[in-house]
Amino acid sequence: MVWPETPAPFYLKEDQDFRTRMQSIARKLGAYFLVGYIDGGREGPSNSAGLLNPDGAQISRYDKIHLVPFGEYVPFKRLLFFAESLTRQVGDFVPGVGYTLSDLDGHKISAIICYESIFPNLVRQFVKRGSELIVLITNDGWFGQSSAPYQHLRMGVVRAVENRRYMIRTANTGITAIIDPYGRIESSTPLGVRTILDGTARFQTGLTFYTQYGDVFAYANVLVVVGLLLTTRTRKTDRKVQSKAAKRRAVK
Image 1 (spheres, rainbow, N blue to C red):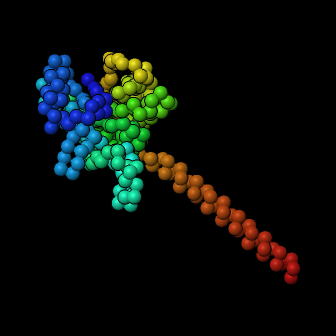
Image 2 (cartoon, rainbow, N blue to C red):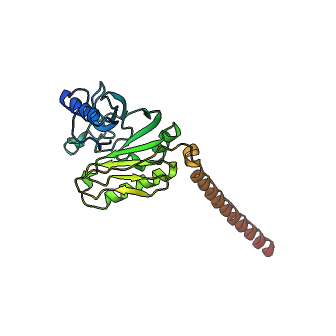
C-alpha cells in the first residue's frame, strides 16, 4: 500500500499518534506500507518516505534528494537576504544524500518524491543500484485542474520506459496510476476524485542501455554536431583563403 507525499505535516518519529496510526494500518492489512512524511534531524527537517513492514516496523527511509527551489528551500539564501518577505513561507528542508533501496520480501524497490521524476539521471541511479520497482509519491495539489498533473504523469511514463521498470505513482489529488515498463498506463484514477486504485505491478530485473550508461548517446550526438560545425567552418575558411590567393595571382 502506498500513500502520497506528505499527506499531512506529521513527523513519523516524533508524533506518537501518527506513528501508532500508521503502524496499525500496516498490521491490520498485513501489508507493506509506504508513506510520505516529514522527518526531523539535527540539520533540519527532510521530505521523506518510509516503508513499514506488515508488523508495523519501519524498515527503511528515503530523504528527498532533489528539493524544489523556492518551494522546499531557498537557493543562494545569503545572497537573497533582501527578499526575506517573499521567501518567508518557503520550506527549509535538508536534501537527502543517499539512493535508498528498500527490501520487500527479497526484492528491492525505490521511492522517489514529487518532481524528482523529471530528472532522468536521478531515477536511473536507483535502478542501476538494483531497484526492481519504482514508486513515486507526489503532491500535485498545487497544480489544480491545469495541464500540469498530466504533464507530470507523462514524465513518469518516460522514466518507466527508460529503465524498463513498473512505476507505481500515487498523487494526493490525482493522477494515481500504474505504468508498465513500456510506458502503458495500465490503470489510473481521475484528477480530483477521492478514490483508491487497486492494481498489480511486477518486479523487473535487467538493465537497459540507458540505465547502464546514461546520456552517453546524447553526449555523443553533441560531439558529432560540434565536429560537423567545426568541419564546416574550417572548409569555409579554407575556401576564403583559396579565393583570396586566387585573386592575388590574377592581379599579378
